[in-house]
Amino acid sequence: MSAAATALLLAKLVIPQVAAPIQIDGELDEIAWTAPARTGQFVDASGQLASPYSDARLLRDNQFLYVAFYAADEDVRSTDAFTVTFTGSRTVTMRFAASGKSPNGIRVARDVDGSVDAPTDDDEEWLLETAIPLASIPFTSDGEVTATISRCDVTKDRVRRCGSWRGTLVKR
Image (cartoon, helix red, strand yellow):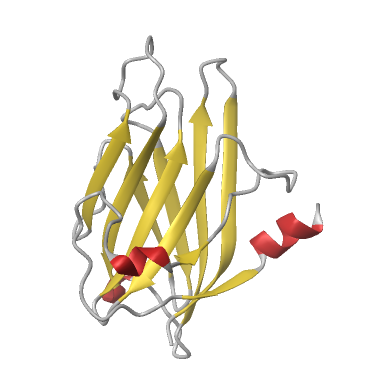
Protein backbone atom coordinates (compact mmCIF):
# COMPACT_ATOMS: atom_id res chain seq x y z
CA MET A 1 0.00 0.00 0.00
CA SER A 2 1.37 3.43 -0.88
CA ALA A 3 2.25 5.94 1.86
CA ALA A 4 -0.49 8.29 0.59
CA ALA A 5 -3.08 5.52 0.76
CA THR A 6 -1.98 4.55 4.27
CA ALA A 7 -2.25 8.18 5.39
CA LEU A 8 -5.77 8.37 3.96
CA LEU A 9 -6.79 5.18 5.74
CA LEU A 10 -5.41 6.27 9.13
CA ALA A 11 -6.56 9.90 9.02
CA LYS A 12 -7.82 11.77 12.03
CA LEU A 13 -10.24 14.51 11.06
CA VAL A 14 -11.23 17.28 13.43
CA ILE A 15 -14.71 18.31 12.31
CA PRO A 16 -15.07 22.11 12.09
CA GLN A 17 -17.97 23.56 14.07
CA VAL A 18 -20.18 25.98 12.16
CA ALA A 19 -21.76 29.08 13.68
CA ALA A 20 -25.16 28.58 12.02
CA PRO A 21 -27.04 25.50 10.84
CA ILE A 22 -26.43 24.35 7.27
CA GLN A 23 -29.38 24.46 4.89
CA ILE A 24 -29.84 20.94 3.51
CA ASP A 25 -30.61 21.70 -0.14
CA GLY A 26 -28.05 19.71 -2.14
CA GLU A 27 -25.98 22.82 -2.83
CA LEU A 28 -22.74 23.40 -0.95
CA ASP A 29 -23.05 27.17 -1.20
CA GLU A 30 -22.76 28.11 2.49
CA ILE A 31 -19.40 29.67 3.29
CA ALA A 32 -18.75 26.91 5.87
CA TRP A 33 -18.46 24.37 3.03
CA THR A 34 -15.30 26.15 1.80
CA ALA A 35 -13.32 24.73 4.76
CA PRO A 36 -14.80 21.38 5.84
CA ALA A 37 -12.91 18.36 7.09
CA ARG A 38 -12.30 16.29 3.95
CA THR A 39 -11.62 12.60 3.49
CA GLY A 40 -9.84 13.12 0.21
CA GLN A 41 -10.23 10.62 -2.59
CA PHE A 42 -11.25 7.15 -1.45
CA VAL A 43 -8.84 4.24 -1.94
CA ASP A 44 -9.51 0.77 -3.32
CA ALA A 45 -8.77 -2.57 -1.66
CA SER A 46 -5.16 -2.51 -2.90
CA GLY A 47 -4.58 0.95 -1.38
CA GLN A 48 -4.56 2.80 -4.70
CA LEU A 49 -6.72 5.85 -5.35
CA ALA A 50 -10.17 4.56 -6.24
CA SER A 51 -11.92 5.21 -9.50
CA PRO A 52 -14.49 6.53 -10.03
CA TYR A 53 -13.69 9.40 -7.67
CA SER A 54 -15.56 9.61 -4.36
CA ASP A 55 -15.05 11.74 -1.26
CA ALA A 56 -16.84 13.11 1.78
CA ARG A 57 -16.77 16.52 3.47
CA LEU A 58 -17.81 17.07 7.09
CA LEU A 59 -18.99 19.92 9.31
CA ARG A 60 -20.97 20.04 12.55
CA ASP A 61 -22.93 22.23 14.88
CA ASN A 62 -24.31 21.35 18.32
CA GLN A 63 -27.07 19.14 16.88
CA PHE A 64 -25.91 17.67 13.57
CA LEU A 65 -23.00 16.16 11.72
CA TYR A 66 -23.25 17.54 8.20
CA VAL A 67 -21.80 15.25 5.55
CA ALA A 68 -21.57 15.99 1.84
CA PHE A 69 -20.99 12.80 -0.14
CA TYR A 70 -19.58 13.35 -3.66
CA ALA A 71 -19.54 10.70 -6.40
CA ALA A 72 -18.24 10.97 -9.95
CA ASP A 73 -20.48 8.62 -11.91
CA GLU A 74 -20.97 8.02 -15.64
CA ASP A 75 -24.23 6.08 -15.07
CA VAL A 76 -26.12 7.26 -11.98
CA ARG A 77 -28.47 4.60 -10.62
CA SER A 78 -31.03 5.12 -7.85
CA THR A 79 -29.43 2.16 -6.06
CA ASP A 80 -25.94 3.74 -6.03
CA ALA A 81 -25.06 4.56 -2.44
CA PHE A 82 -22.54 5.49 0.20
CA THR A 83 -22.38 3.33 3.32
CA VAL A 84 -21.10 4.79 6.58
CA THR A 85 -20.19 2.72 9.61
CA PHE A 86 -19.52 4.57 12.86
CA THR A 87 -17.74 2.61 15.59
CA GLY A 88 -17.34 4.09 19.05
CA SER A 89 -19.47 3.36 22.11
CA ARG A 90 -21.42 1.03 19.77
CA THR A 91 -21.52 0.41 16.00
CA VAL A 92 -24.02 2.13 13.70
CA THR A 93 -24.26 1.64 9.93
CA MET A 94 -26.14 4.00 7.62
CA ARG A 95 -26.78 3.86 3.86
CA PHE A 96 -27.29 6.95 1.72
CA ALA A 97 -28.61 6.28 -1.81
CA ALA A 98 -28.34 8.45 -4.92
CA SER A 99 -32.14 8.38 -4.97
CA GLY A 100 -32.07 10.60 -1.87
CA LYS A 101 -33.39 7.77 0.31
CA SER A 102 -31.80 7.83 3.74
CA PRO A 103 -32.14 6.37 7.21
CA ASN A 104 -35.06 7.69 9.28
CA GLY A 105 -34.43 10.96 11.07
CA ILE A 106 -31.72 12.09 8.68
CA ARG A 107 -32.28 15.00 6.33
CA VAL A 108 -30.89 14.52 2.83
CA ALA A 109 -30.92 16.61 -0.33
CA ARG A 110 -29.30 15.62 -3.60
CA ASP A 111 -27.89 17.20 -6.71
CA VAL A 112 -27.46 15.02 -9.80
CA ASP A 113 -25.66 16.06 -12.97
CA GLY A 114 -27.23 13.60 -15.36
CA SER A 115 -30.32 11.46 -15.34
CA VAL A 116 -30.93 8.72 -12.81
CA ASP A 117 -31.59 5.19 -14.12
CA ALA A 118 -31.08 6.12 -17.80
CA PRO A 119 -28.18 3.88 -18.92
CA THR A 120 -28.05 5.13 -22.53
CA ASP A 121 -26.90 8.66 -21.65
CA ASP A 122 -23.69 9.90 -20.05
CA ASP A 123 -23.95 11.24 -16.51
CA GLU A 124 -21.32 13.18 -14.62
CA GLU A 125 -21.78 13.15 -10.84
CA TRP A 126 -24.08 13.18 -7.86
CA LEU A 127 -23.88 14.73 -4.44
CA LEU A 128 -25.82 14.18 -1.23
CA GLU A 129 -25.91 16.83 1.49
CA THR A 130 -26.96 15.31 4.81
CA ALA A 131 -27.68 16.30 8.40
CA ILE A 132 -27.15 13.38 10.77
CA PRO A 133 -28.24 13.95 14.38
CA LEU A 134 -25.14 13.86 16.61
CA ALA A 135 -27.15 11.83 19.13
CA SER A 136 -27.31 8.96 16.59
CA ILE A 137 -23.52 8.78 16.22
CA PRO A 138 -21.72 6.68 18.86
CA PHE A 139 -19.02 9.17 19.82
CA THR A 140 -16.91 7.99 22.74
CA SER A 141 -16.64 10.11 25.90
CA ASP A 142 -13.55 11.81 24.44
CA GLY A 143 -15.56 13.00 21.40
CA GLU A 144 -14.14 10.55 18.86
CA VAL A 145 -15.62 7.91 16.58
CA THR A 146 -14.08 5.67 13.93
CA ALA A 147 -15.80 6.06 10.58
CA THR A 148 -15.64 3.91 7.48
CA ILE A 149 -17.23 5.51 4.41
CA SER A 150 -17.47 3.39 1.28
CA ARG A 151 -18.99 3.37 -2.17
CA CYS A 152 -19.10 0.79 -4.96
CA ASP A 153 -20.11 1.59 -8.52
CA VAL A 154 -20.73 -0.49 -11.62
CA THR A 155 -19.36 1.47 -14.55
CA LYS A 156 -20.65 1.35 -18.12
CA ASP A 157 -18.00 -1.26 -18.92
CA ARG A 158 -19.79 -3.41 -16.28
CA VAL A 159 -16.88 -3.50 -13.88
CA ARG A 160 -17.66 -3.13 -10.19
CA ARG A 161 -15.23 -0.70 -8.57
CA CYS A 162 -15.16 0.14 -4.88
CA GLY A 163 -13.42 2.70 -2.72
CA SER A 164 -13.46 3.71 0.91
CA TRP A 165 -12.03 5.96 3.56
CA ARG A 166 -11.44 4.99 7.18
CA GLY A 167 -10.36 7.25 9.98
CA THR A 168 -11.22 8.87 13.26
CA LEU A 169 -13.65 11.77 13.42
CA VAL A 170 -13.08 14.19 16.27
CA LYS A 171 -15.66 16.66 17.60
CA ARG A 172 -13.89 19.04 19.95
